[in-house]
Length: 203
Ligand SMILES: O=C(O)CCC(=O)C(=O)O
Ligand SMILES: [Fe+2]
Image 1 (cartoon, rainbow, N blue to C red):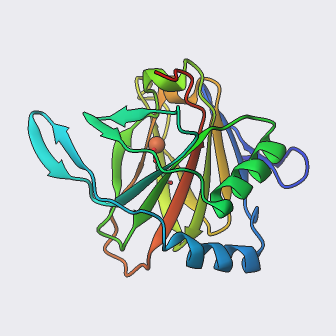
Image 2 (cartoon, protein in one colour; image 1 turned 180 degrees about the vertical axis):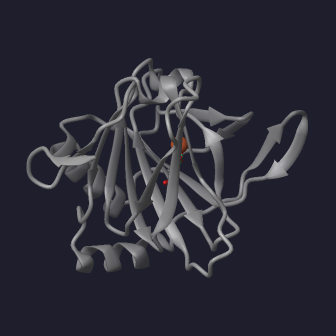
């Protein structure tokens, strides 16, 4: 299912999607330094509105990037923090290795196995029609699931996002597929995920 493309990239074959995965994108030293530094991000637990009800998201979030990049989902307009040195350096390095541009990053902290993100696509208008999302994982490995929105003949895709790995979703992926990080009863430590994005409208 996976094949070498060049360097560390593996392509993941999947209809209606463009996926590539670089397992050890971060060295283990840099990974460990980053985990320490990222503990100090401005973590916040958003309240989102689902079917008219206000609920706390089952994870912590922090939003960083260029000051004009504004982002909202499920009725939350998230305040943007200016780049930290670590995040800006990561953004630059990820831009070189993906040949894509990013002006913001949504950080997620899954404190343990009861934190999660439910089925969704990163298809907000401000990301444009064919967004590229670069997703860097640190800390505990967690399962990442994808399911096609309409084709029931296609099996779910299941990946374990390893610490230090970079997953890039691009092209039609968000249009046709949903993804989630399910809760798990297994004892797992904290995981941090950074999703680098390009916000197109500076409204
Ligand atoms: O934690 C992950 O790997 C996925 C996060 C995600 O889907 C998102 O932030 O939109
Ligand atoms: Fe997502």
